[in-house]
Amino acid sequence: MTAPNQEELARVAESATLSTALSTTRPASGLALQLDAVQRRFGERVVLDDLSISFAAGEFVTVVGKSGCGKSTLLRLLAGLDAADGGRIESDGRALASLKEDVRIMYQDARLLPWQSVADNVALGLPGRRATVRALALEALAQVGLADRADEWPSQLSGGQRQRVALARALVHRPRLLLLDEPLGALDALTRIEMHRLIEQIWREHRFTAVLVTHDVSEAVALADRIVLIEDGRIALDQAVDLARPRSRGDAAFAALEGRVLDRLLAVQALNPRNQIRGRVSAIRVGDVLAEVEVAVTDVFGNPGTVVSTLTARNLQEHALEVGAEVLAVFKSNEVALATPR
Amino acid sequence: MSANVNWRRGARQLLPWAVPIGLLVVWQLAAQLGWLSTRVAPAPFDVLRAGWELAASGELFVHLWASFVRAAIGFAIGGGLGLAFGLLNGGFRVFEQLFDTSIQMVRNVPHLALIPLVILWFGIDEGGKLFLVALGTLFPIYLNTFHGIRSVDAGLVEMGRSYGLSNWQLFRRVILPGALPNILVGVRYALGFMWLTLIVAETISATSGIGYMAMNAREFLQTDVVVLAILLYALLGKAADVAARALERRWLRWNTGFQPA
Image (cartoon, rainbow over all chains, first blue to last red; front, side):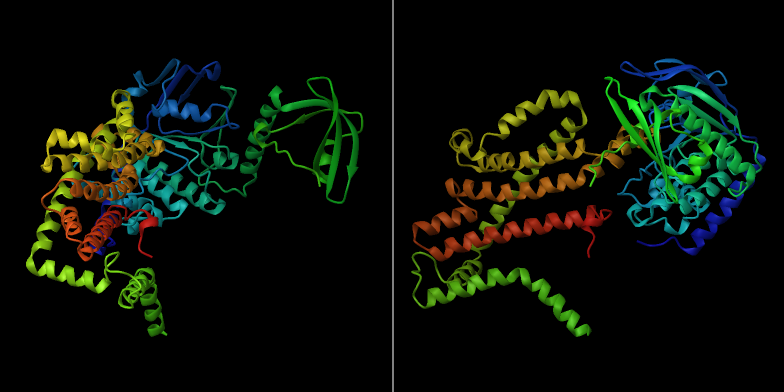
């Protein structure tokens, strides 16, 4: 395969700066969103329960919550991939479903067509003459820093590069609402931070409304104007993030906010009655680094049993537990593993 | 160093041929030393000579051409129908409901069992042979196309829809390329069935073709020509497979599994 020649790249760079100039002079083009009593059921199970929330035009909202809380379902409704069972999703009086051309989604996996070149993947669904479409695709690829890979197969790219191509594919349609369904979940930490910068920069340039679903609170704090926490299909927290951009993770305010959201997330999880057992501390063993807390519990059939929790000795001090204290043993329902003791 | 590498590469390319060539040498020796009667099997050199003589008289090419044309037309009809039904039934539940059960029933009838009926219907003309070849090639292509369409990544289809592809674009750019590896597997199976069917059809009722040549030679106890015909089938089969692989390499370039090492 041939790489795009210098001349072509130069033209792309030129048109990229031109479009930047255009987008800064243009008024904010993001879609404002109003969700009113939105409901989604799968059979008997209510996944979204009378959810009402508004997003301002050009706002960057992240939706966090534990797995199965309904955050991805919400995103699929916004993308028009699923229909709500009740309620309204509108943008300034128009049903969002009628604005499909203005909405683009980035998935957790890049979902590139393996049989098309990178440039053809980006150009997917663009109307127009082949040369025009290719120029647009190269321009979008230049924005994510991959113009020189335009004529390669997706299989020749790394995971992070594939997600950048997917981002370019979404951008080329000039979306007014960009939905991001945990698009960075599968990337390594360093690539993820790079992608945060890229997404933030592109969002500031294009001023679209962005809704990012993630389970990574630090990612949410790094990118969001607003963090929305969903639990059992309802909004449990709606937190504005007033930190100056670009944000630094080392910053004290950053860490404090991240801690606050995380605590809230964990507290919300602890309220779920399926994943907790009430009991009394029966023994505490403290080692050099780790400590074990033994909790005497009773299961749903009335049988007595023991739950042993391992934690750091330092963490134990913070909790100030003593034998006989009443505690809740809380599990993450999707992280319980069974093992045979040796 | 590089000479050594070249030599090794050469050796690797020759290795698949070691067994067939070895067998031929043993066979020739056995025939020359009189261990093997020429009534049972002729010496390889006799087969070569028969091939040379038939080629020189032009008869060989007449038969080869006749067989090739039958194979090609039959394959085009059967493969085309298989592809069409596979795409329709894979793409639309209604068509699957309507056709799939019937196709599965016909598929399970050994198509060569229809020969007596085919002779009654078509006589011993070309029609019957084309019918049999078409029937033999239809099902492998149908099954693999159907399966290929159904196993296209649903995530890619959903992505295509949400990126505004029309139904035709979705088919052309997502579904068909996604099903293509399976379709080509079907093509390779079908090519095998194509020769098998043709051999049988030509030995039963024909006035030209390699099968006819072999049957005719049997009447005159020309074992060398019979073996020649069998070898020709082997070579034609190999040629068809090479063609199918070439298609795979061309159409599945994106798939790392098909990239030249």
